[in-house]
Length: 200
Image (cartoon, rainbow, N blue to C red):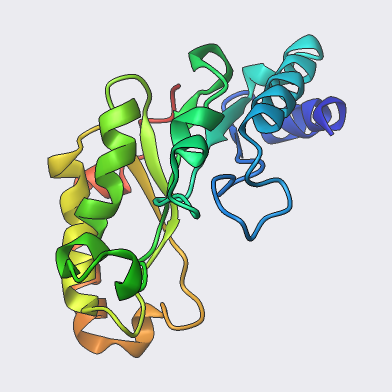
């Protein structure tokens, strides 16, 4: 893959990055590569080293991307147990969705973006550029509040430089007129439409 990608980059141009987000949500039990911190770190480093050896790290932006909450939420499965090291990560991403009420012990605030991004920001926000690599509300959440907090992330956690809304299932903005109207208003900010922050 990495050898082939070099030819693709030559076709696309020198300044076109490849955002590379392998093995995401590794601190979760629903992926086959999950729940194995030692194996994950070793696999990630090997993958990065191969990319570096063939010259692919010059164009690939390696995005290390945990789920916003570890499942199970126990010490050995904490996201930091999977971190391969600063030299192997360009950006830190995050999957950001509202967890079920059973997982937040009745704390409704804990189901929304600012709370969901707090942990990963506290651990990596001063070390790496950050993104919500995928996220969105659910029918069981206050969609307008979710959108409002979605755009407050950059004020609370300024190292978040990109946000990717997963617009499917029950997260479709067009199905929620009030949320869509707010989204359309807030996304006009130059902070979100600028293409100048592409560096590592």
